[in-house]
Image 1 (cartoon, rainbow, N blue to C red):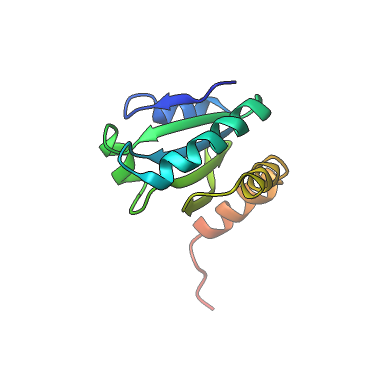
Image 2: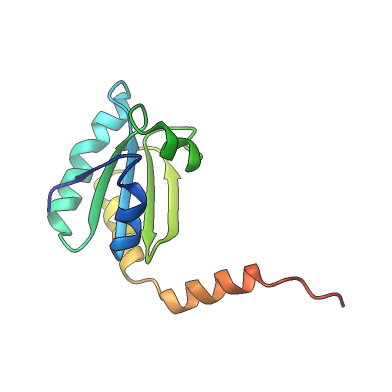
Length: 125
């Protein structure tokens, strides 16, 4: 599956409508972003069951700001609409493959339980 261009308009629906989404935050002027691009493209080919989205931080400033992007490239992984990975810096292919496997194998019942526990009000003891 080829990579998907993400924009301010389609970012949220892409995250909500797909089980697993990897997002490469990048910019055309960024040399490490250009070095990471073929690795990300190859991952998209190797993992057609995962949406690989590229978000140009210059063109989609609203999403980049909301995501707190301060360095590029930044890779984020979403599973069931939940951010489960966030790291700045270009990754080598084996590291990206390891992240993909980790995201696919997450126990999402446990992740959702952890989120629910974090959102519970603290008890006064």
